[in-house]
Amino acid sequence: MTDYDRPHHLILGGARSGKSAFAEREALATSGAAERFIYIATAEAHDDAMAARIAHHRAHRDARWQTVEAPLQLGATLVQHDAPDTVILVDCLSLWLSNALAADCWEAERAGLIEALSACRGRVLLVSNEVGSGVVPLGELSRVFVDEAGRLHQALAGLCARVSLVVAGLPLDLKSSAPS
Amino acid sequence: MTDYDRPHHLILGGARSGKSAFAEREALATSGAAERFIYIATAEAHDDAMAARIAHHRAHRDARWQTVEAPLQLGATLVQHDAPDTVILVDCLSLWLSNALAADCWEAERAGLIEALSACRGRVLLVSNEVGSGVVPLGELSRVFVDEAGRLHQALAGLCARVSLVVAGLPLDLKSSAPS
Amino acid sequence: MTDYDRPHHLILGGARSGKSAFAEREALATSGAAERFIYIATAEAHDDAMAARIAHHRAHRDARWQTVEAPLQLGATLVQHDAPDTVILVDCLSLWLSNALAADCWEAERAGLIEALSACRGRVLLVSNEVGSGVVPLGELSRVFVDEAGRLHQALAGLCARVSLVVAGLPLDLKSSAPS
Image (cartoon, rainbow over all chains, first blue to last red; front, side, top):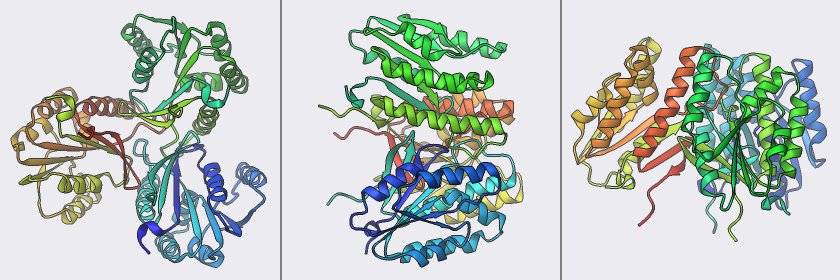
């Protein structure tokens, strides 16, 4: 299996760029005979605003999605739900990165995701925030966050057959399998 | 009239990306037999630096443009100047969004623009700042600004035949009418 | 020589976007019979973290590169090393802009680079950070930095045959010479 045979898809975009809606549409529209759709949500409801946002997203999601919550242990969660007939959408990597930095387990989380992704037999779509195109942020934690997000995106782009940047709800293809 | 028949054009770009200059050139170059060119400026001169910047832009603008100032009531201003032979350039939506959030009338302003744009018989070009690709900003108002800008861009992208992202003065097409 | 005959290449990208690695690969892969590869590093080691990052980059660079340090006087450094058989990579313009703003010599530095670039007989690749796509930063110096970076990128894009935006290690072409 060459790099381009992998069906995984990395979807990047800024805040409110429409990247999650694009990922959901794309997963349902292009997954052929898939029989199961797993939605891995990495958000944790730390306050009411966040809880409301999570509930809003869940209520508006297509009924075919089964939601699983995984603020951490993302790799293990992927392995647990992966199957050849299964499409998994992870939304989003940025919150998971934040969770892992806060819990001081980023290296292990990162290695776990890379390993799980390389082994998955089903199709995985990964949504993540593009955060590196503003000025270098004040605060050491923000700088680490931006650096690690950028490095992660580069590593994942190498493991995905398709990489898209979403702007105003519209995808720009950064990498796509060549048409046969 | 299908979605793609609309001649409107949304032009996004970061700070000093050349988006305004691109929009002006594009409006003049591709508007065929248009007889009137209206420039709707949303900036207000709150200080001397801003006044100097506004005067500089105005002095360097092609003489065909007639400038109208509209820090608020953007939809009504569009309707007032719209005509089948008219090209209207709005520069920029980000300042208008700031003005409307500060004046606590964003919902009404937003609805007014969407309605006006859907009804316009002439051509409208809309310039706006891409602000969502840095880290999540500190401060509740900045977060609301980024969220509302992103949602607005998605909504407008659906109403425009063409959407461009300008980087270093160069446009990337995010959406364009299919060639016949 | 028309604008499009110039072989220079401007490479933009966010933090940790993979722009430097792309620039190095591109320079080595597409420079044909070039005999010398000069790497102009604009970073200064102000602290241990920066010194470690510089050493890391230098150790991982292809052995063909000869490294020259130029935190300022970038134009003069280009002229000094330029030759028809030489490829020069400048990494990165953002640090040089920071250095020049701090030393209060930005106008002279900027003019020096533009003049040198127009006169170069060899090929120059310029790496720079895309910093204008977040919210307008707090702090006057940050705003000046974002404004000047954006203006510089526009000016350089006009002097380069090729302009790329790197996201997740993958290049988007913003400008490229037309195939003959």
